[in-house]
Image (cartoon, rainbow, N blue to C red; front, top):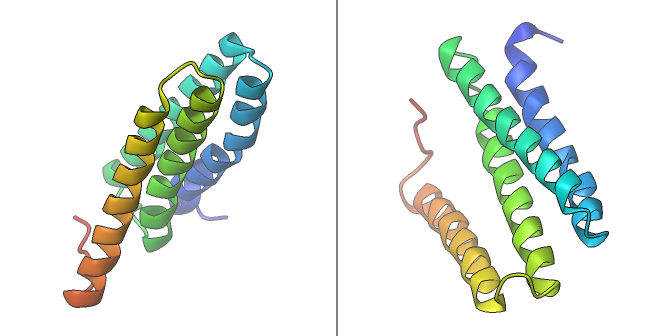
Length: 118
């Protein structure tokens, strides 16, 4: 593995944290859930910093990073909503927002072309 792929590896590890986060939330172990969520948040900041600082930006990273963010957020909101800890309208709003963002990005790419990452 090349050093420039470290941000992608961190993003993949963040995606893999979705399962333990879901298990902690489902078992109502909110202390562990918070720990996993904070670790995921730290990894998000770290991979972004490394990619930008050392110009290790890649197309794969541009896909993995937001995918990891959305999976973590939707999973968290959905489980907390199903446990009636937050209102379902909020869960639906977050999911709808993500659908709109992804749809807008796909529509832009289809109509205009690739998004240039700077």
